[in-house]
Length: 223
Image (cartoon, rainbow, N blue to C red; front, side, top):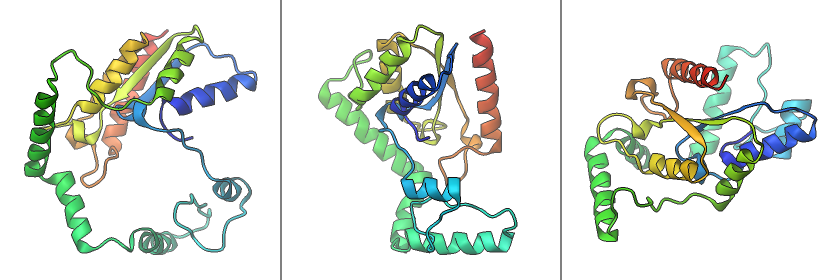
């Protein structure tokens, strides 16, 4: 489906056109979703997934089917070939830079210090807007959700860079400002650092288990 509040609004409009009656809405979002544009799969991807009409070559950027009888060895082989196709241009230097950005506390300290200095130079004070970009389409989508006159709750999920020491909160503050401006109820599901992959921004199984528990609690609170 894609991501971002604009995408949710498009989905809800489509579902209502199909005759679906909406009684309550729980939006699960990360803190940078207000900055995301809508995204939809390409026709070539839909043709492959829906109708098994796939390109002869495993092109990068396409979601490909997995055969029911495909072996683990075949999956590994396809994954290696696709990685080379998509990221073969990355050098060892690029990979080192990526590792430092994701795992170096010194790097994160310098980034936070730079952000703090910029805020001081702008005269930023607590309670003022963060200056982070929230798309105009996001504000319109939030107003559209509110206009449905049904209970709406946004469950905000913390990101990997927002957990642990030297965490960053610029995205979360901007998201909260957008929700408050539209008078939309929200709560946070804080996933700890240990709930994320070591070299990836996605949650582990434990992280997703916590997210499921947060969603259950949010839905119960809307009953």
